[in-house]
Amino acid sequence: MIRNRRDLRNAYSSILFYEELLDSSQWRKDKDLKEIQVKEKALRDCINERKKDIRAYNKIPVVSKMIASDIDGYLLLTRLPELIKSKKSAQDFFEENMRLECAPSQFDCTGQSFTITYRTQKRSDGRYYIFHSVGYDV
Image (cartoon, rainbow, N blue to C red; front, side, top):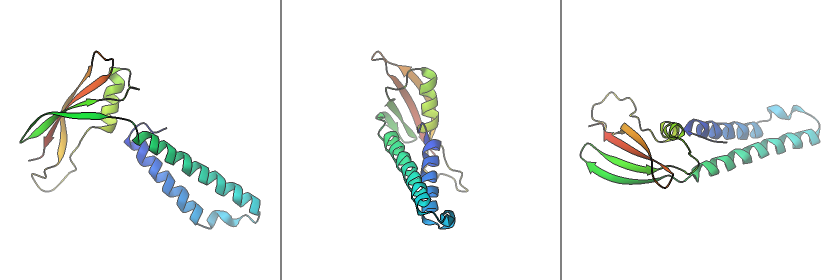
């Protein structure tokens, strides 16, 4: 099960690894054709499971609405998925999936977006929302 971007990256990496393994002839040293077919089927099943996990993760709905905007950045109100039931899990979800960070650069004023601050709030509908303040590197 994929819970964050790190898990997503690992899933993609494992798919690439398994596909390279299927293409290579290193593991096909077994003379038994039945054994080779069993190994290939197991690898293909593992690849298919990873792909299903990736699709499920990408279908998690996150709805954002821009509240305010100016020259230096903007403020987003983001509704988090229903499976988040506590403030701690909402903060963890934000940190792992939505936090924006600037990549280091030797140049000033790259124009990259980054998270200034955020605030978690539970609304009357029982769902968690994040107020996400985003700035530009200018």
